[in-house]
Length: 296
Image (cartoon, rainbow, N blue to C red; front, side, top):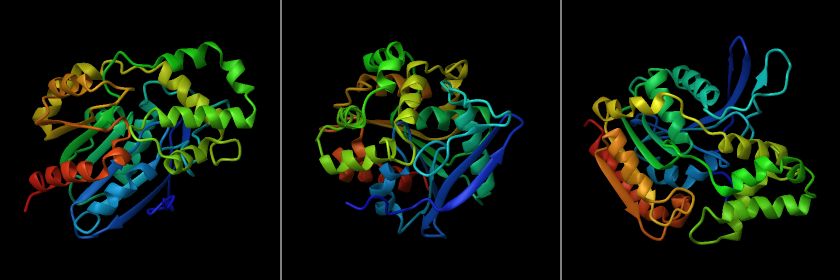
């Protein structure tokens, strides 16, 4: 399995009075096709989209990017030189993503596909930053409270212990975490997704723990109060792995109802990483959705 069919090689830099962001991104596929933007979550990267992007690239112009602090996009820095902030509400991540979407200056609003906490980012783009989408497809997303897994509490309450884990134990911990997101265990996929967080990875184990801490403290603020307006703004589809142990499939109906989604689909024999558990079924659901919502 290739580690990355769509390497993010273009660089976008965004500065605010308080922070500096650098985002690696790429454009691929059919340059004259409707744009489709992919937003990944935690602890993943744009790599999780490569098979779906491959399936769509003949007919769509593909936009992929790695959030700051993922793969080869450096962690955000503070202008005052202090340690980077935790971003439990993902407001900083959404701010950087909004700047990137504006930088693309697309001739038509993109279809947006979001996974995991990329769902919360996508909703902030839409509701707080005024970024227009042609449609929104949410796949096993983090967007509705209550948030968190028991593991997050364990790490947050014993952070000093986890920070002292030797490299071999670090890798075992990361692999176990990723494995729990798969319905069908696959060592090759685990290795690919774990690589950035290992001691010698491009991000490292401390960044992995930081993501766990952010997840432990996840909040949405007032944005959930605006969810009822989303369905009137654009077509929304919710796709969920029926065997997702992180976010139970009943969440799909809750979210779909909150957003007034047009479609809610559960995919059997798929967990949180439906991309790998059922790539063909995911491609079918996304492909038919895009056809239905693309103007001829």
